[in-house]
Amino acid sequence: MKILLVEDEKQISDYISKGLLEAGYDVDTVDNGEDAISYATNHDYSLILLDIMIPKKNGIEVVRYLKKQKDNTHIILISAKDQIQDKVLGLDAGADDYLIKPFAFSELLARIRAIFRRNNEGNDNILVIQDLKMNLVKRVVSRGDQMIELTTREFNLLEYFMRNKNSILTRMMITEKVWNINFISDTNVVDVYINHLRKKIDKNFDEKLIHTVRGVGYILKD
Image 1: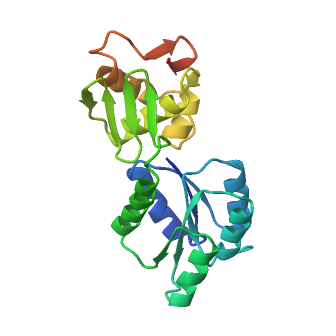
Image 2: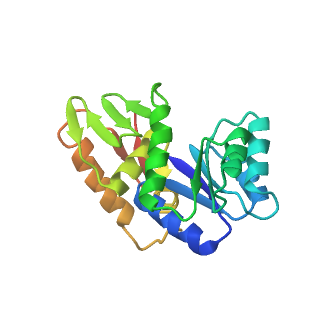
Image 3: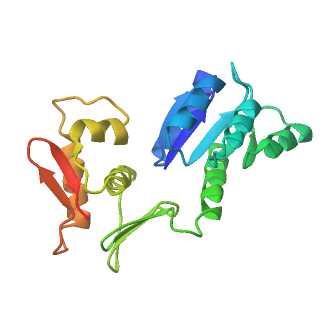
């Protein structure tokens, strides 16, 4: 799941971003309201973590703008402003939740999970390709009647493949999306993780899902 973090204090932004990445989320970061609107408008996010006191447009203005545009992306406001009227203002503007700084990172993760759980009644958070199923909220994977245990990185890699089924993914695309780093030509980290993933989701099954496109990259075929 992809999250947009809007926070102008770099130390806080780095701390939250690092924690979210370790928890298995894909994260983009910006430090002002205008960029927040631009990113939210031009990308597909599952959630926006939005500080209120940010430059150019404050968090409340950003929420109101997005809701006026019929943007249904979930929003958690984060702020040091702890008065009841501040919370009411943020929630009435259209935010889904309001978290007061300073907060425990575990509480932030719990609130994120709660929002996703509330919206798990449909199938938006379930990815299915043949007999391979991924639950994005519970973060569990199964193939047929067999549960498959994946590391956080393997889960993120498989999610990227499943969201882009039948499309060739180059090593550069994979490293930039899953590792959030620029591609380094002399590393074989992608191939290593693809091998790990194949052993878990393909090895004991007749139908192979992940295929190598020689000289280009990989593809997960439906």
